Length: 426
Image (cartoon, rainbow, N blue to C red; front, top):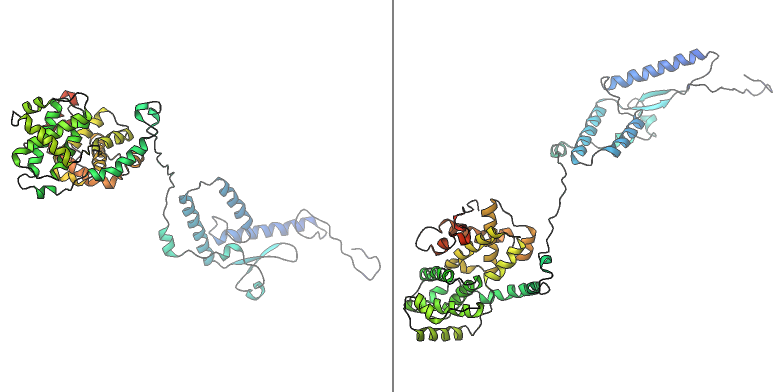
């Protein structure tokens, strides 16, 4: 105490190492500080059973520091978010059970706690801690919280299937997309009505199946190209949809259709005498030439319509097929050529379904990837109906009277493809 003028009183307080007054005895101040610290620790433990600090304003800084560390190192998963939210809800519920307190400083500079309920009037002007302002989660929201692991979604790339043929002039890489766009546009013109047999008075769909099954054997015997077989069937259906034919002339229609297809596709064309001989001389040369003239005029010489073969080649390339997949695909689509009910599907859909069914047969699961879907313009759902019918044809291929396709593909030349088990899970 320093008295200078006698009128004013100046108090000089020396700074100490603890937050208290230096009252002549340093030991007395240290005892007060120890008691305060002990009282605060006991009070803090009693709030939550002595296991963890009560999340009040005193521990607010510690919580913020710990939360900052967690945010830097915690994994970004919904599981962690759910656990964190559950921890906050637990703390909030514990907080509601206890009486909230507000930190104050007494006249000696020490921290004390004042009950909020007892001093509502005095605490009205005090800011409420941010943690106390959080709303409690509803029970229905708590029930909806699930632990969900986040997975990386990798989109499957679409392969460029023409890169390998960039230097091949026969592949016409610069025009192949335009060619197939034109094929897709023109394939509807090559399709016939799936009910055209109703206008035929003397033949039916069973006779058509017998004729095509026999022509498949003739095609194999002459060792003709695959394009020839598909064009032959296309010419037969288009002609029968426009011209009524007697039963005894149906085989002649098939022979002439194959002769025209050979002239269009083959380099070495079978002579008329060979076709007469293979029909067991059922027709004369004059009859063959007359039917050829009639068929060309009825079809108006239009023989350039796309068949399933042109789509098969493109889709097999998109599927990155091997020899086994290629043989099985052609086996399935040749089985479909015999069936009259498959006329309701366009050629491109038949080709895509045959490859899809072959994939399922070989690999045992569905493998129609994004590249196949992009180049074929057919999704897996669009192929299922046609594919299921092909599986049924595969199961019955070796039974009944029409076994030409089965016997053809049951040879070493075709890798005994017909012995593969059908994809029954489709």
